[in-house]
Image 1: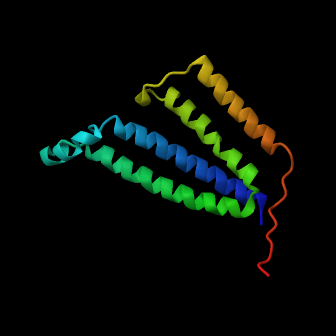
Image 2: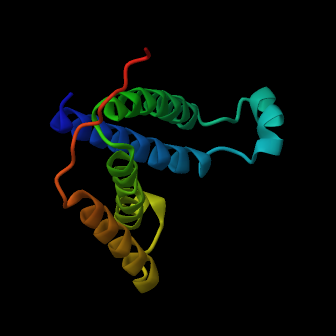
Length: 137
């Protein structure tokens, strides 16, 4: 078991999950409300690119879950789970930075994200040991 490999898989999972969140947000601002989906489909007034991004985001979530499972083989759960918090910070910064999301920075949100990152750093600052597995005997 390798801690480096586990952290790599966890960070890939974070990146894929964050991209999926942003893709879902972008798509849902371009698609009709769910109660209007059937009529929109029958009128052929659905943005095909938004549907494609939703499907890509679902695939990204699926691959993210697989990389998360791979990370759990090599990382202690407390360390691995804290790394997922990076996704909150990443989504916030990207959504507020990129004009297509129409989100804004605020002092309270930025402070909250800074505290989350500080927590991740605190949890991961001590050397971790690879998990030991018990035999099933």
